[in-house]
Length: 110
Image (cartoon, rainbow, N blue to C red; front, side, top):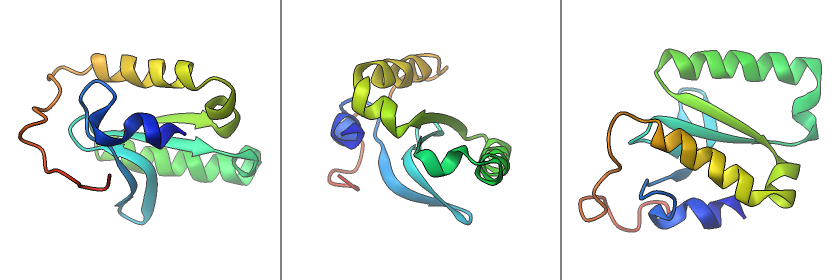
């Protein structure tokens, strides 16, 4: 559901990739222009071990100047508009404008 809102630069003109590798990690969604990762978490992320792992992962990504937004899967199903609004707000907080869609590569991970 979320990919349908992110693909083809549908959200504020920013290009997102899905299942993008960074180091040893695979990000659910990643916007290179904004250096923004979007992670979707199910119930398995609510254990103490998973929380510790996610914190280490986020720290690694932050060390590469990649910001991470996390959402529960239930948020996607029950309140997709609020999730998209939060992502759009994060994109608006960037200091640089969105990329020119005419200059981006077409068909990349769409």
